[in-house]
Length: 587
Figure 1 (cartoon, rainbow, N blue to C red):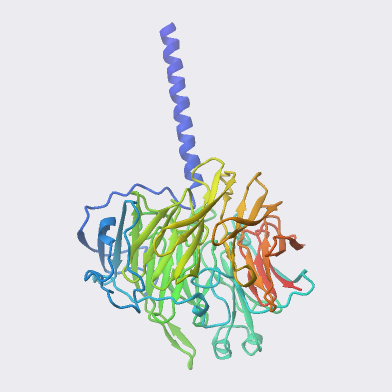
Figure 2 (figure 1 turned 60 degrees about the vertical axis):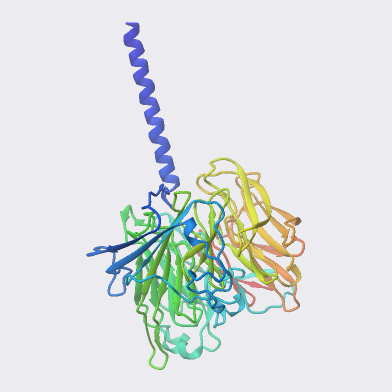
């Protein structure tokens, strides 16, 4: 009898442990639904050239301009393969200073492999080059997340701040897709002043085709639509553009002023049914889809096909550089044909893919690509920051952060080099942990200083740093300012201004409510700096950037501001999870 009872007890224990194990697996799967688990990737042996032929790619195309190609070339490399010394004859750009400003260096002691896939079976070589951030846009406005290739500003224009108050100008109500309401992280609008000739050619409502000084607000939202508004009045300016599921990230407008819209999806289903998921280019002359890149790319190591991050466009070389949550970097030669006289635009894209692993794992990229000259910078869900030579698609260096890095990196030129500011969240460590900020030499990967802030772990809404930093200019040119979420409770946060040279604290500000929204620095015509900041209960704060003092708080009543504001002259545009888009005036 005792033996029988003992056997029953053992069976019950085994059953209980099995249920616990299954529960943990389910929790992990639910937690990682936005990025999927990053697998250990077994790659072929090093120093081998692989050529893959592909026949039918059913389900992977969208018209003639799909992301599929008939032949693919992958070059498999290890970290030992991509150390290129200055003047080495193996460097295809050796001696050409217009293409390659700096020699590559050895990746610091992180086992790393990468592969390049081209559409025509040839080796990849390019001449991409993005100059300083003030030359990125050829049109007035904020065209992309954080404004330019350095990702250092979402403010354009000029303003006088006299009353130091904030006032609502207009409000628009938008919708939802399933439980995804309003505007989510990192949803920043684009704001653009079109030239009069392009304005007349586009599919605007008649009243806006001839409007003088017309400035358009363009906002992607969780209701699976791109919305278009007149900055002055808030009136809709044209029909919305719909995609199959929610847009979590920010839209991009072509920095050349071409009528091209770039936008990606963040969710893969609607009403429990799987839908097409990927990245799109639309004509703003006709509203038609010109390109769809399937996020469920069979050449990606990861199956999650979202695009929350924003691309960059090299205007001179007519090339799109796009990071994906499937872990790929897409280099898309657009071959744009814009006939301004006849009002037509088309593209004939040629797509190259870059995929990589570090420490045997691939990672999804949720932040937006930043770039300095021929170097691209991004971070992934595994906490790996990478500097990538965009002309050869060879890694220059990698750095391991403590946790997931979703916040977009910020760049700044300093002493004839480039510095980057990076921060991580509290996610994969599954316990209260430091969110770490670092200043890193962008050419060498050397860490110059770091600052830590203990933040709480929340599996549903992460703590730590999920917003991009303010890289100070003018009277705050010595500061870099970060926003931390969930510092001493699940509801509060902290904003910290750090000295760029030393990393020492200049001021810190306790926040009653946390925020994922990226703060924006604005500069008055007198050179005085202020911060515009939205929080998780719908408040917009006007802050003195020199001291951290709150000068004014506007309660919009619109709910959580996960998205980030863009500012044109004295007009703030920001959306909320409460299904509102606001225009707010800085007095």
